[in-house]
Amino acid sequence: MERERQFHNSDLTDRAKALRNNPMKEEKKLWYDFLRTLPVYFCRQKVIGTYIVDFYCAERALIIELDGSQHYEEAAEAYDRRRDAYLASLGFTVLRYSNLDFNRQYKNICADILKHLGLE
Image (cartoon, rainbow, N blue to C red; front, top):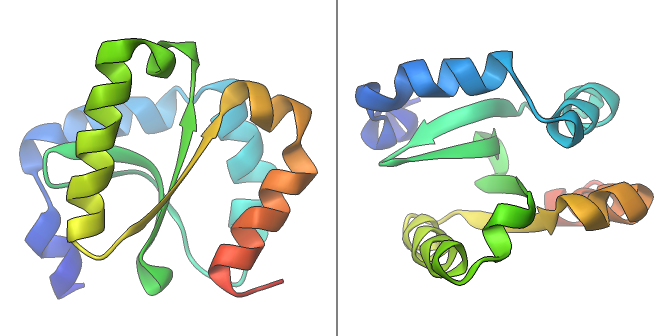
């Protein structure tokens, strides 16, 4: 819990809450059909530093991001690289999947997440 307080940014709390209340369909499916059924606890839209991550498992220091097409524009890719480097510097592993891959390879993505969690 102390570690989480260290990275919390209260300025983003309202935005994170709004994102939790209005998830993208892929986020909704991953949460309701998979992540919340696992024996490890995940948070949705968790504030860490100056960022909001899609899914966060404190127990495994794991972050899962589902990316829409806007993430594949040059500026967004550079932003995501800086963001991932920052999160990695804090000791987090970031798994990033495109919504397109998620919709085409849902079972493979779930298997990959299980592998990273050590639950395979």
